Length: 190
Image (cartoon, rainbow, N blue to C red; front, side):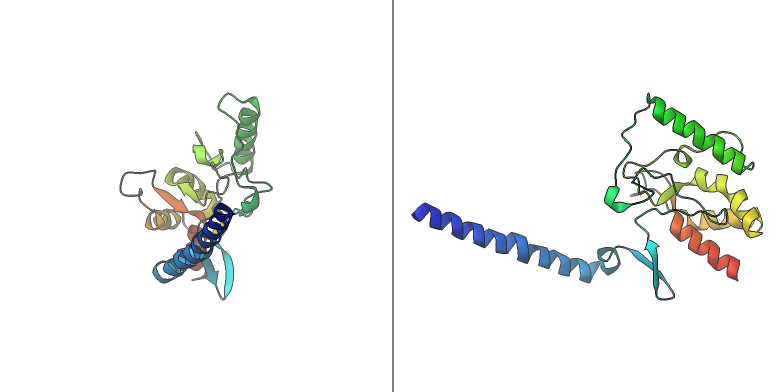
């Protein structure tokens, strides 16, 4: 009986400490030190939430830069996050990439040569908000034409928004698609 009482007390104490107090403390510290990140890195325009800089989303018009393809449900669904699990020898993956490349080249004749890999492949989560510099530069003539903006201006904007490698050596240079499209909208309005 003594063991049962001790086990119950330890369970209650640890539940309160680790299940309630610790999460509240960490949430409070995050809100104080990193309020933007703690609240989901939401981007707000005219008092409306238009997205998160942490999640990719679909842009249907050629006026906007497009994110990587998504394997997350019906396109960028965070509840269905995950890769397709199709490997490099998968015929299904090969056929999808070939179909997507052919479709893009038919839709946008401006796309010449090899297409950047992140224009055709999904990320591990299916929710990647970033594209490579090569992807953005490949899309620049399409976006410039659709917005009646000189392609040089679009490329200048791309280089201004380019984020470097993490810690200077991890990953690749990249561009956040939502941030890039917001900048594009600002330039198109002015």
